[in-house]
Image (cartoon, rainbow, N blue to C red; front, top):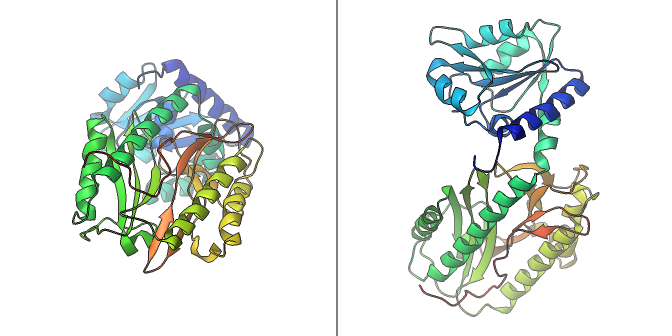
Length: 368
């Protein structure tokens, strides 16, 4: 990835190896996944064929890979020891033999291993989830990651406003969704996605864009994002196609106040649950608490959802450099919903917003 040197991968491997040793486990197995990329800066296909990084608590790591994936991985990870397996081989048996894993060995398993692989490894060693040694270092972004995430946020800002200006009565949700995809692709982004929810559909937080025709004088909720240089974007804005009635205005103002409260609460040393509580208190005080039906936010980086999760009962402490969404919402079934979302970077005096798209219920002026 441009801007990321091999020394960064070595630094990350060393940090995780130290955390692994401190945990008392002997091995960490990380299959092809966002964790694998973060540790190695190499893309590996997620298929039924096992590709995994094997990291010992001390000593040199190796990567097990099928022969047909070996050449690109060797190029992406110069100096990494590769254990190459052929189609007739048993990769789990090869992995266990190479790592000298016994029933007494403590092994941490990364996400995205297939169930059959997990069960086989669990029958051969003492296995546990690896989240506690991987999620924490990944959650705090370095300067290169923050730079890319800021670029991704700028793209999302641009596309959500272009989509709002492009929307018009008679256009289907799916048609506007296709337009959003095209705009992201024009910016060089990949894996675009969108929730286009019009009218009563906006009261469904995870609505699937459909054939409903967007109409005048109703709410239009746009939640969208894409992948920029490997990192994700995510933004939500809610608009009204026409002159918004008083109730829609009131709900919008309450949700926006909750968004502001959540951002102010997202400071170094605060807990994840305290950010959720700060945003939720605004909505509850307005008598709309029962209509805020999801967590206040989630971490963002190589994955669209990762730690930290801003939800009640999560006592995780926020650290400077963590990146997460603040996205309160109010959903009135059968009528309309409002959600406003910014991606922010945790800092000492309160979070810094990466998204700068206007927060205005009225559709902005511009070409359609």
